[in-house]
Image (cartoon, rainbow, N blue to C red):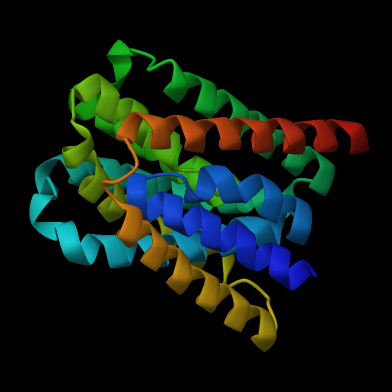
Length: 238
């Protein structure tokens, strides 16, 4: 039963990620943390999200703004080890509470399209990239700071998606390297691999058919519910 739940979470998150350029970590982290525990949930999210981003990048790499991504990715690489250290040292209830709070706060900021002057220009890219790297390795959720940077930089969705995939590939490679691979048995890896493949196929099939605004709000609503659930469970166990 747990394997079916795991596959369902991965499949649903992968399809949303492929359609919108975001969503896997936001939707998958809270239930994966509840199912596998904070450490394993985070590193599995890093691993799966990296694979999805790599597959997506293969189709849109020509639209990547390399100059804009250098400070974002460099800053993320520097902060990934700090996040991995936090995941390894914090007690599980504290870590679950922190993850739930980070997801909830990040989703609310993105939902309201927060305008933050500090997230503009090169300094803004460094700030967003560094925070994204820290959050990605500590909580599996590195996308919201990059989304906020894109909003403040005036990027369109078409511009955002390939650059988000590029950032996701880089930050997740370093996050998995910092944590080590998830400790799953062979059968669970088969479930995860199958769910990822089917999820990306579904996402590719329906990409462009679901209105962007509706897809975005679906992702954010589900992520908010999951973040609040993880936060509540973490606080209950403190």
